[in-house]
Image 1: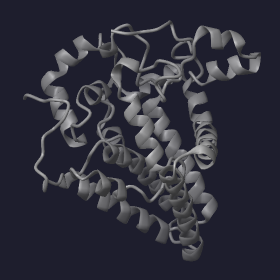
Image 2: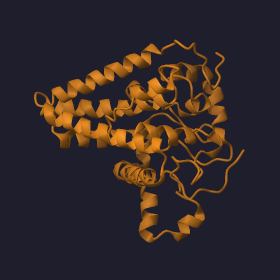
Image 3: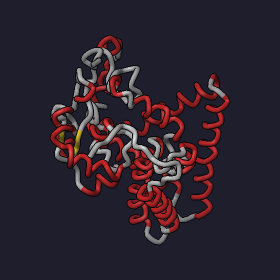
Image 4: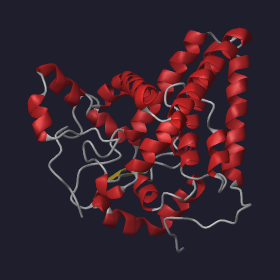
Length: 303
């Protein structure tokens, strides 16, 4: 199979598996809300899954799926079911993250968890403890929501004060839609609002499991992205983003083609990423309380 970074499509083409998944997830979200009183535990558990999957769906949308019309794709994910990260900010930061030569570079890669040695020296004992704890799985799970909320708050304040009119409009729409979701949940009077917020927090933590050690510092950008050979549940939940090295090589490839492509080019992928590989997310339990990597970036890495 010959695959390039950008997948050509006709102007009218639609990726029906992705569109069907989006529709199914919105229907499940509605069903969970309506079943909140009748089946409180089951609906809450399923809501956690639905909101985690929604985050994975939004990731697909910002990569140009399921249509070749970016505005339409944007609209399909503009309703912030997961509450935290607005789609416009995620699109901006995540596409910058896909500049592979900058992956893990502090102050350049917006998804980097590393810091420069000089920055490390300036940190207080509490700051160093936090940076080390954030390199453990339990720390990432505990800190993911407050980290994201702080990041969003800081960015919102900057954009509302000094941003463009388009940036202000994006934030206004996001906040209005979050309020709309809250009002809808309260009016339905089925699932308590506090339960929904807790489900959104758990879903955000679930995504942080996938992102926990997706990237490592390495001189060659091809060595920096992981492959996790996971089971069907996590593959669906994360829309095959466990094959992360393949996704970074072919970011325009739809989620439902990643698994089959990986099977075809597995040896090449593992050779090129220097066997940065785990046989399942359970392997990361080793790093439950132990840092998976030093938070100090080893230095400028270019290729």
